[in-house]
Image 1 (tube, rainbow, N blue to C red):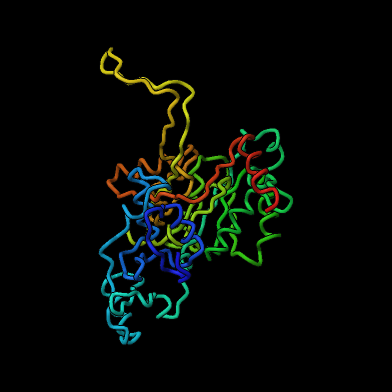
Image 2: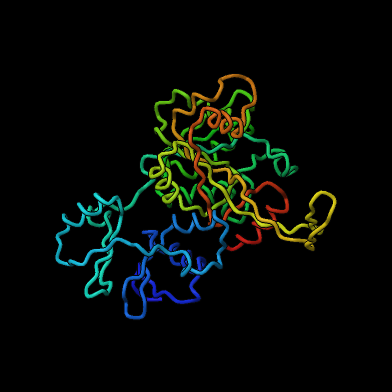
Length: 355
């Protein structure tokens, strides 16, 4: 790999995992690929990788098979900043490489030229659903809400989420609470009042995984588009990429998914009618799960009934689908955990013991 911040020398062994490690240290979410002579070969960005994983590729997939080979570039290195800005805006791209005698000499980024640091989250509030009883973690949750369960000496479950939001400039946070709501409110305000703009909304009674959003139906403090997250999710998801994906696709409702692999305890039999044609011993199956993270428009709050009936996020998604509204999938390849069982909790306590 080259030392240049956004340029990598392509080789036969380079995989998606290698690029992800590189992207996670970069703020630009794109890599330009060159050969041994520093000639531009193409590019690969965060979105290319997510689409590749959704097609069934894995982290060991070779980059040579999936990178984008028709990358737009400029040959004139003497263009003014204003000229380059016009080109980037016309082509609706955020960066462009500059070539000199086929060699890549520089990469120009729109946010740098405009002197604007990338802050995708500035106009997006976050709603954290923290009303549940956390029954699967009893007896720990008998007197403590799940999001306040301790992970290590310094951090509870909710601390991982809030610190990650701050990192991505997501500074306005609404909490939907019910069980032990005062404990949640007191802890969050004491620790984050100076770092975040906080709002708390207590349900009158438990109303499902989406019903509590009805309390924000006419809330003037809520942004037009926002992120909804379950309070028991610990994730390294790139919120900037998620918001950019949401904006670019104009879907108004995006569901974050996560690829899960599970080894079956039994052999899998494939058959036609009553004739066996293959048996695979304890295979590993892969499938996408709902990651408990969503981005959507404020107008969908109108779809949530303001009644005493339970209303889950699956009900909201079904309603949107029935109305023929487009729902997009954003695949998260980053570290993700749902702290739902004692087994998972113990695993995370070991993982984050010294963090």
